[in-house]
Length: 178
Image (cartoon, rainbow, N blue to C red; front, side, top):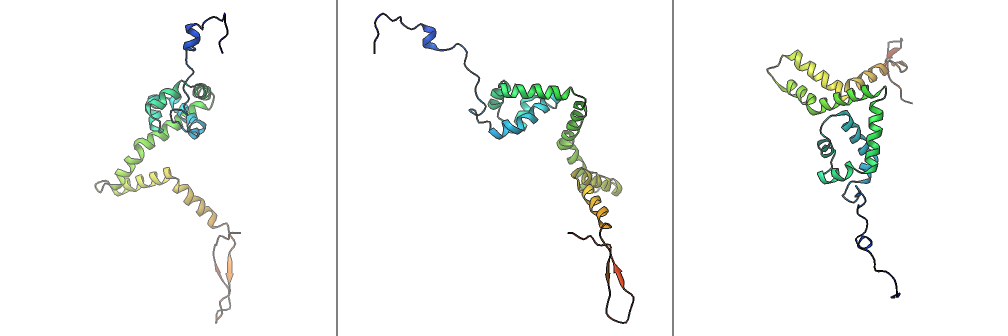
């Protein structure tokens, strides 16, 4: 409906605001799960300086376009601040060193141990050492040691065998699961 004597809208009112709001990471395909869980780890890796931020983002499954949006989004910038605060805390240095060591193992250390184990020219004791190191990294050694320490924890079982032998035979130790 036309109202007489109303001023015409200005060009600023027609064009809208001069700055657009930041694009949403969800709008460019970043999953809600990534924003809730993985973005925090991405921020920690960036602060630790493990690689270039774009490479880390791509390594965690983002596209370059998704990273461009996420990088400047307020949620991620908040996570980066928290990661910096965490890195500057008393435990931050220990965590950064641990994270870098894990990344080094993942990027090449495990493959190096596997190639040493598979090389028939390598001395057997070195191949076994590489195998033991790989088993330790995988956590198999700790699991095996825990089982061994539990082996003597159960009760001994006494079985009386019918026949000429009157003395009981003790067979054990046996782990009893209750």
